[in-house]
Image (tube, rainbow, N blue to C red; front, top):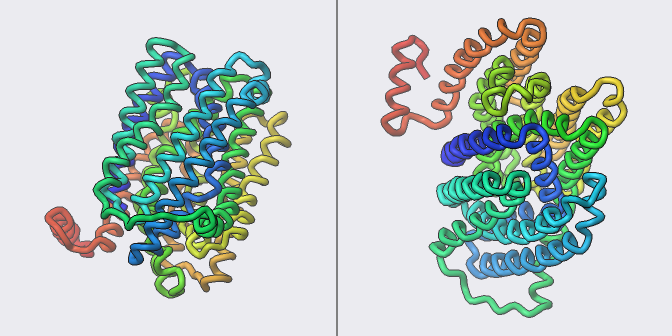
Length: 485
């Protein structure tokens, strides 16, 4: 978790540079346009992937000790992604005019939309490599792949943006997955050589079918969120303009970038580990509580800091033109507490292979989010997106808890519940203060973040144990403070 988290810190720094340059060169409209491209990419990519990132990862994680089975799964995942990605690329290119008119109301960006199809094929081929690394728990290698590919993609995208202006945005979409393919290939080639596989069409079908059957429901759940986001961005663009879409993209981008610090780390290590123990209810419930405590301890102080310092962070990362994104970011950070806790529990549904249940609980967020935006945007404006986010993830968290309680006899440990209540109450209180007295909130948030961060560090150390020089040193410091671990 720390390895992936560290790689995410580097990715965040790279993203800061990328988005800052983009905001300065193209302003809110450029940020909004890139967000629409990315939403289209994610939506078609998830559809073409058929959820095999989740189901394939599950198969790899459970096949680690069976060389023959693992070889078959590796072969089928690569072939499936190649075929599915090729079909998606062709479909996007043939339908590029209709897609462009639907997204922008005109066909002026038809070529760029068509090129996104190529990025989809390359992206799926990269998933074949990264899914293998994650399933085999090659966490360090996975972290290096994400950092190096992000760095190369950012350099190429910024160079294209400098030379071509708005037309260069498409390179942000194309280069990063291509870099991921080649960099990941370097690491997967160092894995043990799989047994020679010669599967007939019938045998390939028999391996692919259960993965696709399980993956489709996961795909629909993930697709619902991506499609909802694309619909929301399209609706904002058409109703409020590209600048408003850029303001929403700025708040959403910061939110997803910083919450990814913990969610990607969790998915990289926690999900495969939970898959291995999911049939042991006691072990699974303990692992879920441990993960919730670790995640809240690490992410909670960051959420508090971003709520209080949102006006300065928006200006620093984007520009003063993005001021309307400030209240959005503050509300989204409160919702992230519910999002994180719900994700911790939600991974148990995926690990257990309950695809239909996963789809059902994912739709709960999307229905609330989409419904509120379409009904209340004419009356409230852009800020309704933030209110809908908080309410949607609160409902989602409650629903996944009820599912886990029924299927795993899941219960919150008192410490887990107290930690969640602490960060929720502090987040709401700081949000209210930020809306009333921004300067007071800016002063209070670093103090609250430092206090909860110290408490969180103690929690992390208690989980990690007294191993290594740094933990030993920190254990000693806490003992001297009269607060021994």
